Image 1 (tube, rainbow, N blue to C red):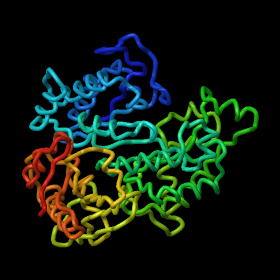
Image 2: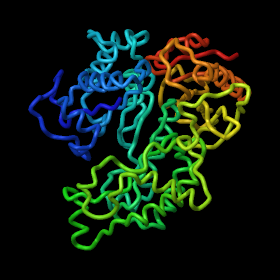
Image 3: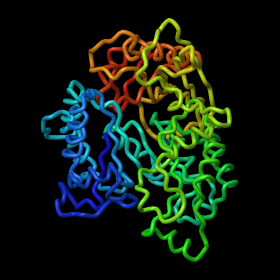
Image 4: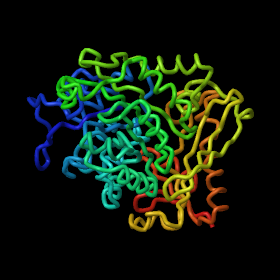
Length: 443
């Protein structure tokens, strides 16, 4: 469920302005998510309820909800607005009004529509230890950031206001605090070339190592400052064939631990002045990759989704890689035809981890479970279906494997960044509530 914050929240406990027709920066009123937000006057309660009602109308289960709060730099909003916004989202999932965010969270632990993930988007230069503690109190489990480029020259030319080193620092802090990390990467920015973009993409897997990635090719719109540079001949958009070839070149290099969520923004083609207008770019790229006899091994290309699985045929794998200040383990169950049935992200902080700066007692001496995800049929909580990966104990087995690895590496406890609606799941598996995380003593 995607909701958008309103462009300019009023001071104090403001609700929403029904007559406000402004859109958040970088969004267009006819993009699907933005259109829903506009139709509901950016009211968080109405946005969530409208989306849940539409899912239920087509028979889609709505018991497990990942909530994505988009619309701009979340950290720039006043905290009372943030609190109110998330509380109203929870009220919509709970179908009952609450007197506080804490009460709304408590109700959601056993609600019919449980929150299993809460995502916000912000900038790398907004990530601080204090900000991460605040995000945890709100219930946030995943953070999206616009890295855009890892080339300081390109970042400066595009007036991003931060460096690649700042992005790396932000990623390291997020990982140390257990958050799942989504980076946005933009080819064809001002100052970039096809070759420099290929080089830049390779930097993503050198310390940054995002869990998820959104590839957003720069699109030339008439209301953007870039339009003036294009008119003067100082900027040239890639053609569609150039863009397809570029992404087809880099997509097979994506590590197995990363999921590519997007390959293009949902911007209607009528707004694009010059360059690629095809909204089916992901399929075009995959067709080109297949034509070359190659394949992409990112999670999205290998996940089983709604297929049935036989637990006896699954193979447990552990992909180890090094990120900034941590050894990461991507533990997964794989089918005989090399499809991912479920996975767990385990982070083992290094001796020079930025954890001390976070001042989070729950994480002292702890290895961190940053995500547990099991695929299969989308079943209601407590339901069962033969062959559904979500109901054959894969999650429990993944946690047990993570515990073994943590003990072997010398960690005395295991912490998990649990969403509000998954707290009881982890408590049933031996975890207890800390201040901001659920924790399990290992030794």
